Length: 269
Ligand code: SF4
Image (cartoon, rainbow, N blue to C red; front, side, top):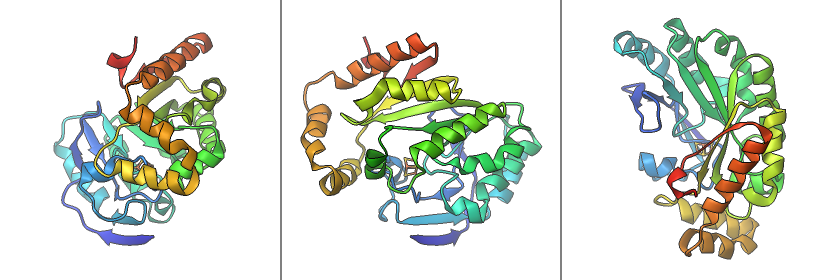
């Protein structure tokens, strides 16, 4: 893992993901999820998952920017995970949260790490904060194939449970739905979310951006070659696979009494 400290010119950027602003304390992500679209968004050519640029100066730049920005929802971790392992040492995300808290900007954080629980003391002081944790499968072996250096499923569920127990609003992100992997235990996934106290489930399908398929394929070739053809059929064949799975999750959410939102709603019947 190549870790480099870098300077940055700005902190907040525009976001097309339903936030007013996006904030990414790091460039790159140790978690190295094979399906990650961030390298395509960033036009990053270095091997994804093998480098992290630490934006050491971003908290002070953020402090200045916040003074002149209109209050709006800040999404933390749209193209990186603010709680990837380096955060334990560098605490850049925590320093940014401290700045956001000073003027109480609303915050939405998405992560695959239980390290977020470290910042509970800050999170509890915001007027508006929510935390989303991603889980794409309950099978730890498949988790390692697609999200090799992210926290285990058990740790993520424990983080959700702890955050909820301490009054933080949480949601589960089932995304991307991985063909013939995520669907192995959909009811178990919804049940686990309900047991952890999650208020809402969001889901999205696997979307291929530049370079994504190459990394997914590489992971499958090395660890689960039997899934290559089923993946190809779903991604390039004429199938309503995602619509079917989306409907199944929606129905499960209904029967378990949990809110549910799909990012590919137009595809659902
Ligand atoms: S945790 Fe998120 S940003 Fe990091 S590699 Fe995985 S999908 Fe990409």
